[in-house]
Length: 360
Image 1 (cartoon, rainbow, N blue to C red):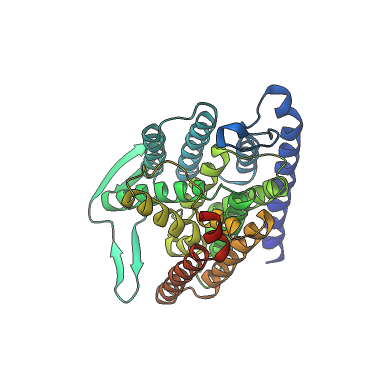
Image 2 (image 1 turned 90 degrees about the vertical axis):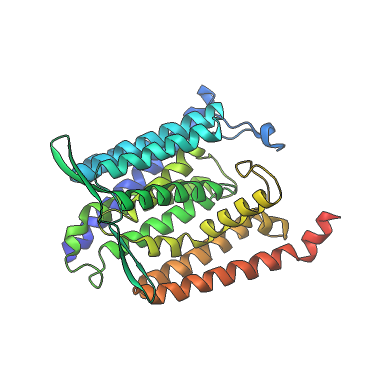
């Protein structure tokens, strides 16, 4: 058992330090090759900051996975899909791709997961039981690996991956928020993957546990440079990559969808609220604004550091609950509590005196 945890500790330390070094090098090299953000595009009056930090994250991830994770068809699919999402984010950072193209490539990346055997076979609903997604199946081979794709599971998987990618991209509005949420979410998935009360054989979860731990280490390493005042920005190449990985880990080798929903409840509910509000007001739902929860925290008078730490504190609390309360019925009540908290918090921020004063 001691070797079991020492092994994971070594993986975490290596991934963390390796990413730390790569990000540090990026802060020195990127200004020399023009990899800088353009604050004037967003009406910001500050000096440019090194951009494209997702490159360091991706390279650290790739090397760490090659060293520590045994390859099978699902790991290969995760690498292909993750690489596609990283490249999409990089080119979007550079050329501002259209929303349709971004969504299309994200759809393709999610489809790659399905083709390589990563998907949801069933989900548990509170007070109802399990819903089986395996009634219609398609069998084929990929690189000499036999793969079975379940139609309804594939549809749910694609929808889930697209939702989490974009929810995580939405929280990349304050420095340190995306990397902080990613570190917490990935670590919670790691804990649940080795939890003996959930898996009779935690060693059988080695791949998903290791990848989750690597993602948590990389996100934490980037947070060191990303927390206000930021020394580098990850860009979409980092934010969407983290979103894709967390979405995939939640359904990789045993579904943890309810857990991921709990940990990412604030980003998910914020995304739903923002999209619905934009549609109802006749706005394009893909166009950004300053009405996300984290922006409202700033407008209510919180500093960037306080806003990020407050947001991460809530995420961490619900993450801890996801570990303690493992049954679906228990998680349902926690999710209901999260929705109520989001409504109360949103209402308090909307009607705060400082926000009212800023509207005048």
